[in-house]
Length: 340
Image (cartoon, rainbow, N blue to C red):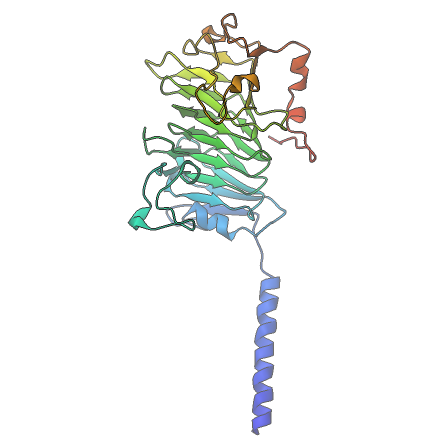
C-alpha cells in the first residue's frame, strides 16, 4: 500500500472512531431512578457517586433511592445537579453523617483554594445543597462533632428545596437555611440543636415539624435581608426540650432585618416569657430589635403566653394572618407552590 493510501486509511479509521464516540455519547441514557446500597446491590455504593452520575442541568427529576445504612459522607449536590431527589428507606435507619466543625483542621494540614487550613461554619456541613429543585425524604442528616461550636448538618443554598419526613441533628448551627434567594419547605421534620440551630437568610416554611432544644439558648437566628417579605415561618409545629432545659428563646436576629413568625405552634414551658432576644452587644449591627420582625399567632402551651413578650415583637391580627399562606410566602418573580 502506498504511503498516501496508508494515510487516507488511517484518517478514515480515526473518523470512524470519532463518529462512533459521538454517536455513543448522543445515545447515552440518564436513568430517572438510581439506587444506592452499601452492600453492592444497587447502582452505586455511595450517595455522592449517584449524584455525580445525574445529568448536568437536567430537566427531569432523578430519584435516588438510598438503602438503609450509615453513610459517612460529606455530600455535595452542586449547582449544576438540579431536580435531584434523595429518598431514604426510612428516616431512622438511613443516615448521612459527618463530624466537621468550625476550627477543625483539614486532614493532613492541607490548604483549601483560599489558603485556609481549618473548616468554618460555612464549610462544616455534612450535606451541602446548591442545586435547585432539591428534595430529601426519609433521611437522617447529622453532624456528630458534639458541642464544639458551629457544626452544620444540612446547608441549603439552592432554590425550591423540599425536605420531608427527615431528621436533622446537631448542636450549634444544625440547619443553615442559606441564601436570600432560596425558598425552602420543611414538612414533618424533626430538628434538634443547642444554639441558633435554625439560622440563615432563606425564606423557609416549617410545617408540622418538631423542634427540640438541647440546651438553654436560642432556636432561630434569621438573617433575612431588608428586601425580603418573609423569613422563617413555622406552621403547626411543636417546640420541645431536653431534660433540664428550661430557658430557651424563640429567636434572636443574626442580622438587622431578621424575620421569624410562629403560627399555631405548641410551645413547651422551656420557652421564656419574653420570647425573643435582641442580640445586644453586636457592634456592627446595634439596636437590631428596631428593625427585626418577630411575630406569633394563636400558639398554645405554657411557653406561648404572650403577656410578657418583649414589646418589640408582635401578635398578628386575624387580618394580618391572611398574608401567611404557602403561596404568598413563596411568591417571587417566579412563584412556587411545592408539591407533597
